[in-house]
Image 1: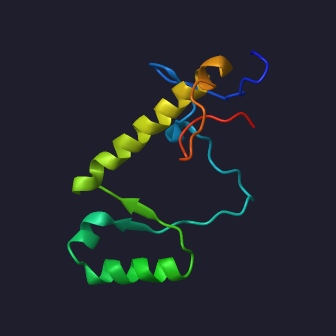
Image 2: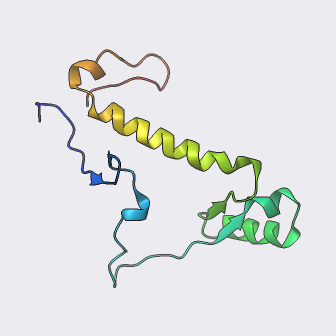
Length: 115
């Protein structure tokens, strides 16, 4: 590994090396505090399901964190899109430092900056 290159822990999948593989992450060890998150159906929310809306509102006021199930909605492609973005980020992290430095940050949030 060249000086200044990030260290990336990867997992081997059947087709490629990837860091983003939530289905391969180990379970939370027993004894560690954890919180079960509520899951809400975007499909039900889009349909105006009052019970689902009330549950979501209550969760937002208390825990503030939840899962949103995109199954059966026009937003289902967001899951695939977010996975593609995660994999693209992995490819960027694999670039050499010289290549990354070609993309200096501008006034926006986009670009690469050595810390």
